[in-house]
Image 1 (cartoon, rainbow, N blue to C red):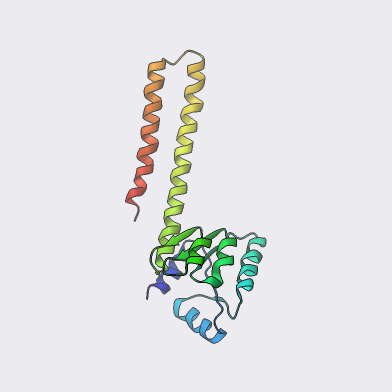
Image 2 (cartoon, one colour; image 1 turned 90 degrees about the vertical axis):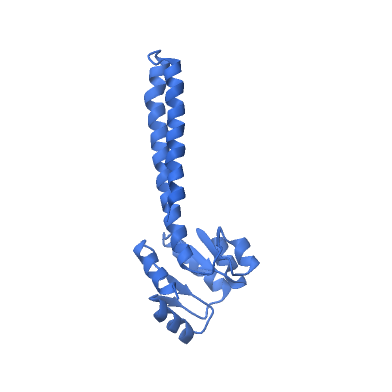
Length: 172
């Protein structure tokens, strides 16, 4: 029931959902229409899924594959990000990079948003840490920075980085 909204949310994140399935074209088209997916590839084999992932990567796209079955395992492993539904097979879970505990596609949306927020936090922390070191190290080498003050500043820098990272705990 949440798949239509999840597909819309994925689009809002700048992602292009594709329904890649071994099911009959008629069934795949009906499901795609129900959830709002425009691009459908049906009646594909596991090898076809793998080739599709590789073709998209060759076109310069970053590919995230969401799957739950044995037939998805090779494509999950080859994708830049393989996401297995926790309700799926052990093979799919083992082949993926990330396993969603629920069988709800909206969890994939949350995972993408959280990973993007995490990358932003990492970049901010790196900028702060490098900025501190670029500013403080020459002063310390030149003897212009009291070692006690440098130690306090380094501790404060670490506290700032950890505090910034802890903001992710409030991610919704």
